[in-house]
Amino acid sequence: MSEKPVYEELAEKIKILEAQSIRDKQALKVLKDYSKLSEKILTNSNAIIIGLNKRHRIVMFNKGAEKLTGFKIQEVIDRDWFKIFFKPEVYDEMENVWKEAWGIESHSYINPIQIKNGDEKIIAWRSTGIYDDKDETGDMLISMGEDITEQKLAEKKLYQNLQFTNTLQ
Image (cartoon, rainbow, N blue to C red; front, side, top):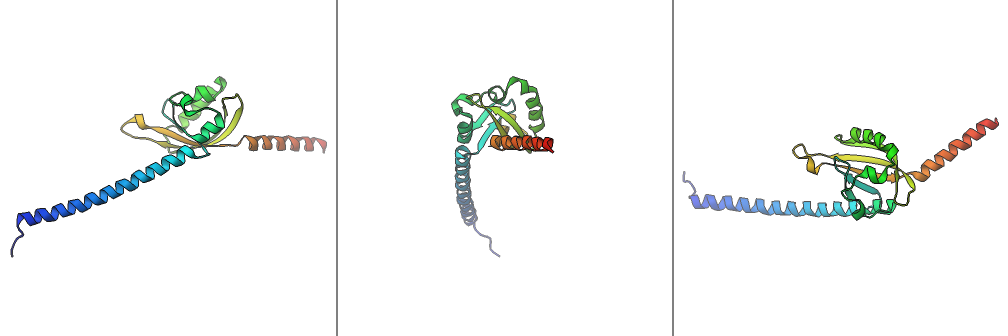
């Protein structure tokens, strides 16, 4: 039984490593392409998409959020979400909601926000946490919101009409 010369074994190992390297480069390109696509979707979506760090500072604010709130990303990035979008009288309530939401994988909540022109919008939020056990600097709560202000106003009007109808009977 003859053994292969060392140079032939090395040549085979090099070919295997080259093939693996090509596959790795292709996989990395696919991941980069998906990352670019995801970023475009998040940035350009009409849905309100925000990302907050542990201190509720804004680290992501998409075009949908800009359109609804009237604020540009440059005006809000790295600022406290609470101080911009909540009235002081709801800080404590929202801090409790925040403590409940931070650290879990998924959370839903409905709350009003105050937009740039002073109007109030009612937003239904669905949040997902991204957490790194080793380093909190990249931790973020990503929230997608839907403006349900008109729906809530219609519900309120319907309720008032039902109450009025009941008083007539």
